[in-house]
Image 1: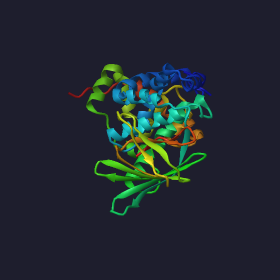
Image 2 (image 1 turned 90 degrees about the vertical axis):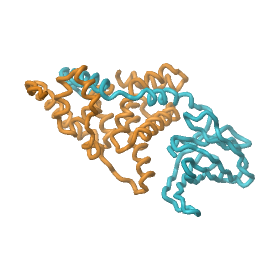
Image 3 (image 1 turned 180 degrees about the horizontal axis):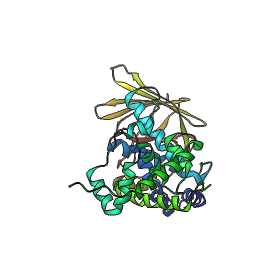
Image 4 (image 1 turned 45 degrees about the vertical axis):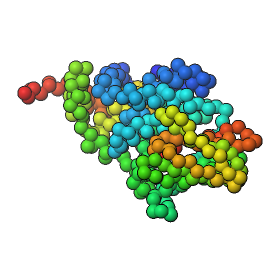
Amino acid sequence: MSDDDAGRLVRAAANGDQAAWEALVDRYARLVYTVARGFRLDDADVADVSQATWLRLVENLDKLRDPGSVGAWLATTARREALALLRNRWEVPSPEFTNSELMDELQPEPWQRLVAEETDAELWRAYRQLPIRCQELLRLLVFEPVGSYAIAAAALSVPIGSLGPSRARCLARLRALLNQPAPQRRT
Amino acid sequence: MSDDRLTTSEKELLVRLGSLLAEVDSVPESVRAAAVASYSWRSPDSELAQLVESMSGVAEVRGDEARLLTFRAESITIEVEVIPVRDRLRIVGQLVPPQPARVQVEQPGSESTVGTDADSLGRFMLDGTAPGPARLVCTLADSGPICTEWTTL
């Protein structure tokens, strides 16, 4: 989906097209969920952040300055909602978390490993060997439009210009890991 | 701009990674359903009152920690204090300028809408709000409904 498609869906949804809305949810529900989960939130809070983010899109459908960039808008909004919830909870002024600090603790659940083994074991093994920062960046680059700096920059709250070298480096490392022979299976 | 100049092989790799992560990191059905259902809260004919101030950790008379929120629309300001009462929230509000109005709390996932009438001084109180995303809808005597921005309480 290009920016144009995203913009069309936003405009159609603003005019009452339920199917266009569902298409937007299909494209970006996982982006919103991924951004929310990057913070130290429990499942109920992640659900609240996701819900609040989508409700805010509903109320802003006809107000977005650039409907084609709705992916980046959703990433920014989810990040703000998550930070607002944390601030509110901890009553500390504006903690500026980076996702990566928090994601260092994220390990794949056993079931994730199982699913991944069935889907694309080789790629999963390579991906999990990447530095956390690369894993975090690449997981934000898979959303449409694929490779978009705008979405990743919005989700991480970093300047767009800082992502070019990182994207190339992380993809090169992933490819290098893929080309290595798989390690001997331990039993 | 749309793909920020990915090479073909880079794009292929990201698409492959995307399919993998979609399987591994799938969104719970309840979260997706809530996102779809958000659309039913579309209210293009109401005026939006923006959140202009939010203060948390305000000591309340009885020692509870309250949160102060100020929403502003063109013709009216809605000031509310959100006070935790056991596992629910009490909303004590004031309309500025003072005027009578119907005030309702809307929450996705809640079957019924709780409402009350603000008195002639514009004061109102609502009990029983669940923590989570919510908005207030004010219906004034002489205008259409005014909705506050969705805010996670």
